[in-house]
Each structure stands twice: as structure tokens, then as C-alpha cells.
Image 1 (spheres, rainbow, N blue to C red):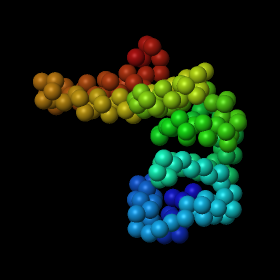
Image 2 (cartoon, rainbow, N blue to C red):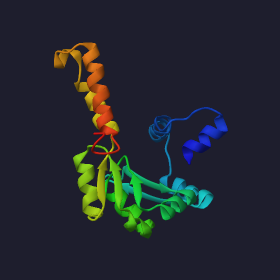
Image 3 (cartoon, helix red, strand yellow):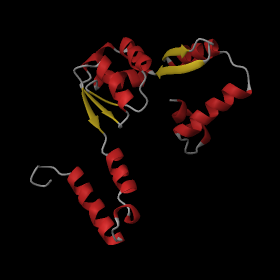
Length: 173
């Protein structure tokens, strides 16, 4: 929602990295009142906001969910594509969205600790590995130098690996 608002008001493409950088600048360059920010997000946008702080009361986690996000999760709880998993994040999200207990599939990267957290909180869910990561590893590891192959052989290997990854049947595989 913040990213969308900034994109609309500035009429520029705003990436999540931009939002993260702005948040970091705001946190380090000026005093802020986290309670006031949470109050504005909940009152102005009807958002659910939960914060996690460490023993020194420094912000370490933030869960933000607006009305549209809640509606989408309620409508499609079966699949959740997730990037940054923390046990706190999922437990908090689960308490705010009871239907999330119906989530049956998580698309993750290869992070084993992340997968462990998900498996712990959602023991009946299936964890799928995004194809993006293995294909990226293939591109990084299948090199002419490492494999002692020509550039044409490398291209053929990568093409075959990609065909295998996207095969629609065992025969096509």
C-alpha cells in the first residue's frame, strides 16, 4: 500500500527497495513515534499493524495488512507466496487471519530455516520450491570455465535443464 501510494503520488516507479531505503532513512535521520505511525495506519487505512521489538526496544519486525490484503487472503487462503518468513510473522498473520489455517501450499526459496518455520506452523502444508532459484543456480554453475565446455554446449545444457524444469509430463521430461 505504501509503495502503491508513493507510485501514484510521485508518478514514478517505486520499488520495494525504494520503500525500504526510505524507511531506513526515516528511522535513522529523525526521531519518530512508532505508536503514532501505527495509530495512523490503523485509523487512516483500517490496517492491522503489529510490531516486534527486541530487548532494547528496537523495531525488528512489522506486520502490515490493509483491508484489500485481508480480503485477498480470505478469498485465496490455499496458496501463499512468501519471501521473508519469521515465526513471529506467520503466527501474527495467522492470528489476524483465521482462514489462513486453510493454506495448503507455500511457494518458497531454498532457505531451510524459512521452510522449517513454515513446516512447524503449518504441518499439513506442502512446501514447493520456486523454479526461479534452481534455474538461477544452473545459470551460475553451468559455465564454460567450471564445466570445461564450449559456449554452445553451455547454452544447450541450460536449454535442456529449463525444458526439464517446465516439462508438463513425465514423457516430456
